[in-house]
Image 1 (cartoon, helix red, strand yellow):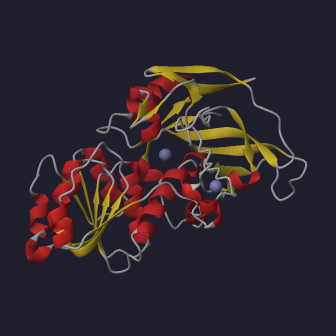
Image 2 (cartoon, rainbow, N blue to C red; image 1 turned 30 degrees about the horizontal axis):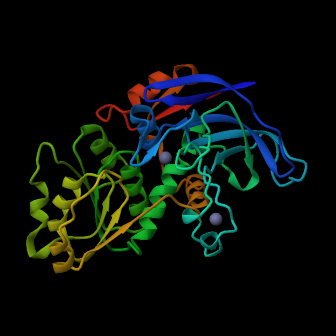
Image 3 (cartoon, rainbow, N blue to C red; image 1 turned 135 degrees about the vertical axis):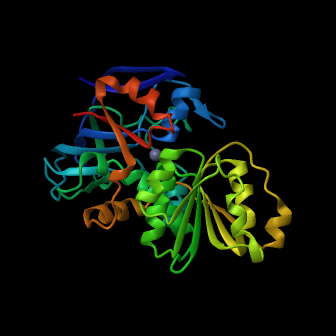
Length: 345
Ligand SMILES: [Zn+2]
Ligand SMILES: [Zn+2]
């Protein structure tokens, strides 16, 4: 027996016993090492879900995890017990029409860890031990810590968002919302060749982190709400906006700073947003979504293995497994926390 972190209802998070499940020939048994608390985990914790998605049965949370292989299935010979890995929480079916087209993030039969989108819910990875498919395991280099390895998932989300924008070489980029995903978008945009990266937020901690990881400038919109006005001259300044806050004011407030034919990548999920269609038309803006990732997971791990990105500045706190509820409570405090992780071993 082992234990995991199970959400039963809003603010009813329990550490409880779980079955590990039998190891199939093509699977791996993994000791979970680190797990990062994500915005979606927090939505389940505080509100029991988001949008139309609601918890209808107890569910293990968590999808940003790293681990160490404890046992390999009898058919597997290319990876050994002891290997340290980042675990992709994404399990597309491989057979549906979108998987066949290489759009696995749109899989019709996706089983993404810790998601109440389908019934029965897909159980998550905040547990001491987990059985995974071989394809979910991505070996990390010795210098990549367990905590960094657990950042591969949010980094994948950022890489996918950046790829949705198209080539960034020589582009001027604005990032609205600099929590963990926003800061990772800053990192990914820099890596992709952006000439200028400006980040906005309403809290100090995210803004400081954005500068630490490579933003040229971080603007506090709570203190200087008109700060983007200076970029509005001559129909705007930025070629690309990554909107990571999910906040209507952040999005609409940034539009005047965008050049004609600018690309807006919507990464943040909020409620409904009123988008001024006159600006969309008049400036020929291109507003597109970015949802999850697929092949970017392997890229994220390789970027960390080769020391081409450094995600360490994003990890603000690590709580032992026994203090998981405390970790969930503090993780929502944007003034103090970027990524909060739980240490399982
Ligand atoms: Zn996440
Ligand atoms: Zn599929």
